[in-house]
Amino acid sequence: MYQNNSLLYKKHESNFIKLCECIRSDPENFPGGHQSTVNQYTMSKKTIQAELTVKRKTTITPHYIRITLTGDEVALFANTTPGANNKIFIPPAGVDKIYFPDFDYEKKQWVHQPGDVRPVVRTYTHRGYDAVNREMYIDFVVHGDNGPASAWALRCQPGDVLGVAMHDRATELVPAANWYFLIGDATAIPVLSNILETLPATAKGRAIIEVHDEADEQVIHTPSGVSIDWLYNDNPEAGSLLACTARRQHLPQPGVSKFAYVAAEFSTVKALRQYFRQEHHWTKEELYAFAYWRAGTSEEQSAPERHKENQEL
Ligand SMILES: Cc1cc2nc3c(=O)[nH]c(=O)nc-3n(C[C@H](O)[C@H](O)[C@H](O)COP(=O)(O)OP(=O)(O)OC[C@H]3O[C@@H](n4cnc5c(N)ncnc54)[C@H](O)[C@@H]3O)c2cc1C
Image (tube, rainbow, N blue to C red; front, side, top):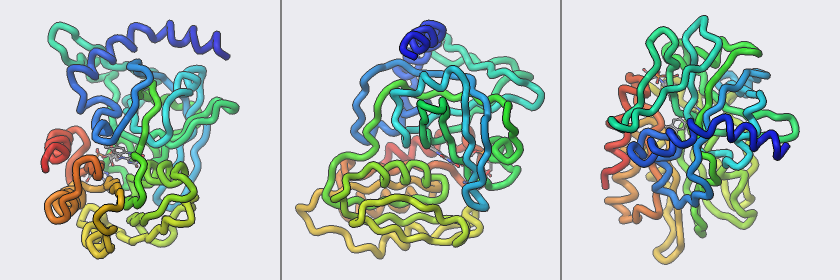
């Protein structure tokens, strides 16, 4: 296995270097870049990009699909942390190979492949890795045919290819704290699940998660001191009650160490950043808040605003 890994790393060495260069010049636009507001420890600056194959497609709930990916290159993800974000590369219809972008060192920018083979790039969460079965998982909200990623998850079949890129490192998703407040819509279920599943057994706090309806609640293993409240919203593009529900939660007394993780639609994240930072004076170190999507726009269209919002307050 070790020898296989070495060979794979060798095979991808040039891409690793290119991608590391990119991280330095464009930290916001690269997988993991936005999570740097949470303490993270970089064990390696390498970045993986791999062409994987759909092995299985599982309906988790009516609006959630798990895609199990496999392939020789799955082993490259052995050092990554479930819950960290990735980039997925969806090939155009009829193309069964992933044409990853190159990096132009002189101009310090990505050079995309020609339009007829260029993959669509989206940001998702590395949900899990199984070394024994050589599998990794990504869970997709099914919000219809209106986005390439959602449409791909709905239609993909075993054997279809998907490109995945990630930093090759361990990531600390949340710092140590006495009280956690985890707030997210359906897109955040993978990261919140990974956080909840890995918090110490003594952890205390509350999670509020918004899903389509009761049938979309997922089983998440949590420490006994952390409760989950589920909210229902069958049209998240039209608005959300997450922010006003979160505002009703009693916050810990001064002196208790605390941490809030907010991942949801743009308006919710903006409202909650204002709430924690301006109304309650939580420090930047006590809050991770990032807009995972923006209603009415595609990921690439909303990226500048979402990253700008992340820098505010
Ligand atoms: C760090 C990070 C991690 C993420 N992890 C996950 C994950 O693990 N699983 C996951 O499902 N999503 C995740 N997301 C969110 C996902 O990237 C966005 O929902 C993305 O827009 C989906 O791409 P798309 O091609 O389906 O739609 P796009 O082409 O981006 O958008 C097309 C239309 O779809 C609508 N839309 C997009 N997302 C939703 C939604 N969730 N509900 C309703 N309408 C929507 C938009 O309003 C837009 O009008 C993550 C985002 C970030 C930034």
